[in-house]
Length: 304
Image 1 (cartoon, helix red, strand yellow):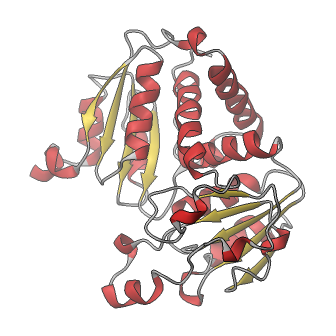
Image 2: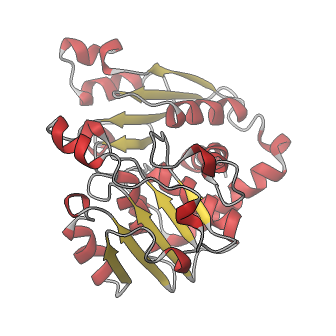
């Protein structure tokens, strides 16, 4: 039985296979409409989510399966003091596969040690968000037709942004990848990512606080919001939340085929005037997320 807790749980070849299956699902949806008939996905979301939870539910329904679960910790028995371990063992009796989001780093890993069905980490605190990373990889592949020879700019909250950490780990496996990290000093990419992923693999990167300085070099611009829920005090959040706002003016020097991405939800770090720019890919990203999660569910249930 396989789980997906960290993007590193899957080899580069397995990720490429998932992308291939997701692409086939997009092209031939009728071939997959009953693949998960009589299967049940449990969505256990201990913190709020719109896209990830609904994407998983839509994915399972599109495969002909059923869904059960909860969308906040307050509506589960954890509000009565039940442990994550006990919750998982219980829900495993009712379902064939579980997608779990939790505010505490490592909670899905703990759950995977107690489960009888496959576990998918749908985000754990500021640590990992592997299915968002799979979504990002599919988006890049569909928009650029490759996953190598890319210069990727990541902008905003690089310290707490779990989507950033997972994407850097995943893209580091591909050839000729260069990162431009754009953030204020307080939200820089963590040292362990630089040491354990970038420097260990000899990957070139630049750190800057100027979003326009390297704009003309970028193939991908990955914007992130400054996350209020990750801050210990509101003063720091208010000081940093509007540090970067992407607008048309900042895109003047950008490549014509730049791919602008964002894991969403957006607050105000991308001006709505950018939405109509043909380089804006963040709503396409949402759509791609459903198809890669369909492929992932099929893989973990050993149906492909």
